[in-house]
Length: 175
Image 1 (tube, rainbow, N blue to C red):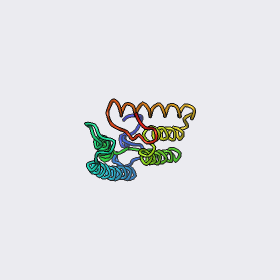
Image 2 (image 1 turned 90 degrees about the vertical axis):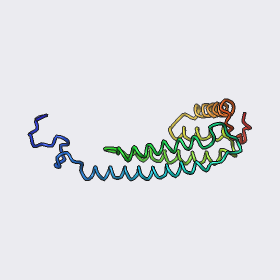
Image 3 (image 1 turned 60 degrees about the horizontal axis):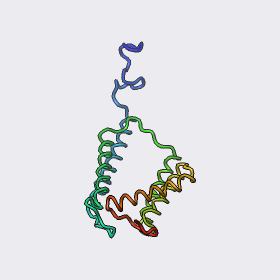
Image 4 (image 1 turned 30 degrees about the horizontal axis):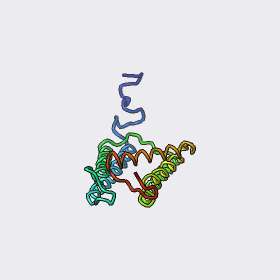
């Protein structure tokens, strides 16, 4: 007898008459998480399989190659999918609409970045992407522009000169 309850009271949850067994609503939530986990796992397996078809680009490749990072991302995605299948969320909270639409915009901006990367080059495309994402998270434009540009230039310099992985030059001309 704890907390003043009588011996027949359910100790697991105050409103579950089933003696601590999961309710049907909880089972549906877990099933939804597991189905989503299975879908994500299938997408991750497909993604990793597709990365095996990547060819060396015109920008060259270092010892790591163009397949490594996408493959690692796919494996990480698969691990998170397995985690969702094995240990679903007890009481998931869905994002508010204002947050969800921002995530959709980020995906769209990332897609646009991929389309503009070769014609504009890494520095210009990355600067634009960082500015757009910063704007959607209410960043001050006066700080976003110089910091986004500086970040893109530093990344391009590091990748091109230290890591010897050529990024698209585009309009900028590169290092």
